[in-house]
Image 1 (cartoon, rainbow, N blue to C red):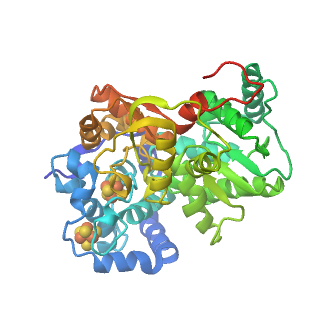
Image 2 (image 1 turned 180 degrees about the horizontal axis):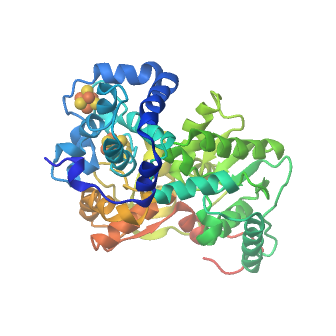
Length: 444
Ligand code: SF4
Ligand code: SF4
């Protein structure tokens, strides 16, 4: 069995935070978080966990490291939160470095283990509290902290300037009008049925996804809009860095933008973690039992368009595909059946990977782990050998994943383990194979 001390990795952000930190602050910050933010939930978990280890085989890190107990869910909690509680918050800087590495880079917050614990203990929640403590002490990996700073300064994850955002939308509208002459990307349209929101990597380097979404809205004849002001980015790395204050500010801006535009609902692009932030975590921090504006993920949106016949497929994606179930919308929202309905609508043949649905293995990128950047990339990819084996066993070369983080994580796994696979979003396939409006050129 290894220990976290055996595998510590240098990270500039963690080290800088530790250098600045005064030992005297540690206990008071930890006691403050535990007393004012955790309540009965953490206490119950701490007092009921039997240390039985039944959660171990649920975790892809444990399985990918040949059953090393140090990577099991309970092992990770034992090396972090149980140490914190045992010491009544009086832990050393050296321990904090270890806590930060485990919490930010060795648990994806995927919540698979919760399904396998006889008591339903949510290890991801416990690890999130460890991240919160690390954040409050300023001990955060550099790369994820940079994205959280971007959220704080710009309300988007990638330092996209206000004029760049509008330019990107206008550019995509211009491009799309060559194919669909009457297409618009309507900005700031008050009272529209839908506000479409995306994550910041889309205007930055995946603009074709905005084009495709516009084509789908246009083909379905929907009344929609996109905001021209900050509040358009639905991603939220502050949720994963432990910065609940910035996380909440980002989500409030998102909802207030939809309220300002008086839209009937928000449609979110194909991103899982963003959906978790908007519908599960940040809304609760803001004190809303239900979101103030109804929100749907793209999977639900596409399902409705295809079931209602607003979008019809001219052809189906040829060949065989397999489905990756993103944790945040499957375990987090229960969209497994709708995801399958959509995939069967748009693809000729589907082979399920095993296990699947709420039992599927995580991509090892969500939960903010991929955002901890290059220092931790190798261990992230190796820490998901089990996913590579699962993908290979399907014998299929086309993978569908309706989540940006999953694309990032799976692309790294496919490359590292030399799997002959390529990945699509649902929107890629719907756009390519849907029936075109009468005035459209090209397409199938
Ligand atoms: S979290 Fe649940 S399954 Fe894991 S050791 Fe504790 S009681 Fe057992
Ligand atoms: S939440 Fe996921 S990554 Fe974290 S310990 Fe549980 S199974 Fe492992």
